[in-house]
Image (cartoon, rainbow, N blue to C red):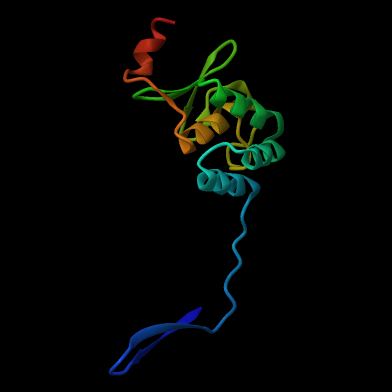
Amino acid sequence: MSLAVARNDRRHSTIERVLTDPPERTVVTATEEWRAALAKAGELDSDVTQCIIRVHGDRGVRAIEAVAERRVKQYRDFTVIVGHTEEYVVEDGGCTCKDSAYNLDADDPEQACWHALAVVIARRIDALDHHDMWYAEVREFL
């Protein structure tokens, strides 16, 4: 808690904050840490890359590879990750892959499949491959 103290004299008008209690400590998760580092760096530098891999292991490696290979596609309606055998739709942090459906806790923000991780990374560093069309229409041709 803090208390604002106003001081006003002829030469200065100031407001000072006086702490009356120690500041509350904010807990930062490992995922929040690498996301903040990525936002600050604006690119996938070696420190951010190692942090992602440390937190997410093989999923992190695969996400980074997908971004580097420009396999994160942004359509008008969905973001799609091109896998080696299939395409996966990522929407609002959720993914259509089996890993997401069967192996991960949807209520745990620390858990994400590599497709969802790739979307977060690509968006943050502006590495989405934009397509000015509806994925629903493109999907008909596949």
